[in-house]
Image (cartoon, rainbow, N blue to C red; front, side, top):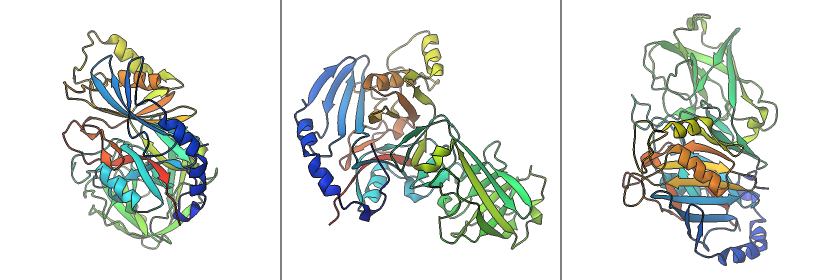
Length: 429
């Protein structure tokens, strides 16, 4: 069973022995032909002998239309391989290339990044200082950094190697003194419906809010930086409420985020209790619950936008839109993004395999891209039964063996918000 439970360098004394046991698998892998054809297109193997047993990499030339895809297939039964996610610059605000995130991860020394692709959606422009903010779930090394929004388009991996897919929901609250407030968002722009937003040190140096429409409550008292209640519990029961104290209340906006605490933005629509009553020194506790409870065991998780496949079926909305399309022209770009031929990135899986797929696009003589219905159909053809759509367009990046091997539509590698990795344990002497 695929496992991600070992997260530290000293946890791999048996890595070399596992590798030796898998030499036979590697020899079999090397005997595969470099090019082969199946219904729908031609596969050309990439790096067949350089990376790891249990990892299959290929370019897929889809001949139904002019599209080139790059695919990584990771065996879920290879204990040396792992699924991980990475946050750009290790904080919410700001962006970073997939290549830079992969190289930074490898500097930790415990694992090598074999494959990396771009991650989820969010604010790519500046957006009044919010460039880099994610718009769906991100859990990294057990830390809940942003909450699920498109709850059905989420994917995660537990310590034991179990794969999770949506729907997932967060229920959270904060008690200040005797008053309880519902907590709607973590490290977000002020979203509709979120009257209380939590900003942790993962956001960056400050909240980037303005002085209008709300007040901010400054909280301190965490025993150690980044170890507050936003860490996912390691068992079926959520972490016990973690204590903080109010150190101040401000209407100025853009509050500095304490490294040993957090900031609560409270909308002016919240009339009871008056935030002004939260005096310095008042006790505060926060409680987080993820539902279903198994999501409390997630080690790494990411959210996209739209679940492409569920139980081997293409999302009904995509099927309906595809059938209703009056004229399908290969390579056509339209204002309806689901039907437009664009570069795409997706994550899928079945009982045995994890799939990372990047489709190049906007390059007519090379690759025109895919509609989301076509992307879902190709994932089915490759063998996936579950899949989510990740960010696409110029963000679509396929990084392998220390280099970007696809052709991003922007002619250069774009800085993105987060990334997905396939990593391999390295030997420790």
